[in-house]
Image (cartoon, rainbow, N blue to C red; front, side, top):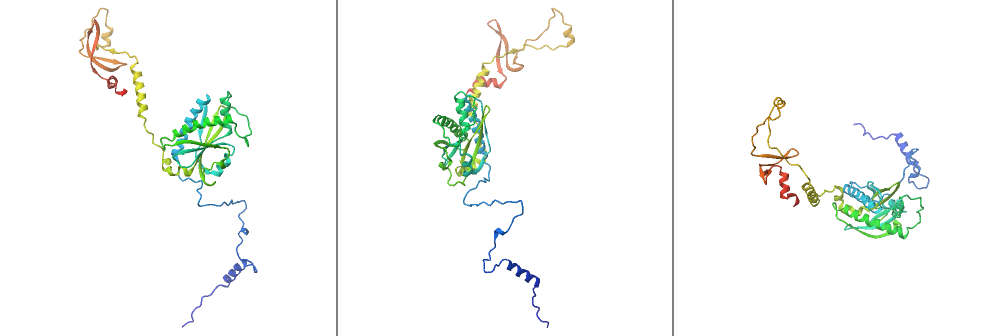
Length: 349
């Protein structure tokens, strides 16, 4: 029997392993790996940021379509409201919804006039943020100016009492319009709480890293431009997220349709039309027509029924006769069903 073959090891592999282990061992020192000794390829930089799993970050998986429609409605109605207040054409355009952290929003709106608003019955508070440029444009327009504003240093400057009262009136207008814009999606009631100049005193989120949904509205009055923003914590609308994902279903306003139809019916009844009664038709040829002379007699048969038309459209049928020495037609049938419905007053119900 041959001797049992013992497994052999490659001397080169053993020597390589020993060299590798020796490279991580220092005489009498810690053998841990120094991560800082590793270098990245040239030209590449890595910005390492801590990630907290307990904080909801800015990524919103669903598109809040209904909320975008609400913002578009608000922009259209607010443009009309500004025109009624300023008596100047104003253009208001809504930007897409931007998820961001509350800390990022605070850095952007550090100079804005912040207004805390409750959207009952939703829990929490939202912010209506007005830029100083918008306030100056409105003030200048209300006092007879053309809406143009010069560059005014706003940092560290508080709004005057007059400016705050004007902001409050514009805010009241915005809250009424914003509440109406939500009516078809989720009925809310806007409630003004207070105003602040610094976002750190608003406390609409429990953490600076919480996600908020911000919508910027660009306002243009003449040659002047300004912005204002609506900031809503994501935690506020998360319970009704399913309603905000799908677009709202437009309900038909039958009351408005009836009012419009009644006004149209009244206008039609007061319109003047020409009734034409064709007594008879004579069929002939061009040759006979050209051969006609003065005092020629055309024989016809007296019709039993006569069609009455309006613009060439038959509307009535009746008998020919006389009433009080005047030619007349006795109505026997109404041909057009619309005229019959107008007579019965169907559209006025």
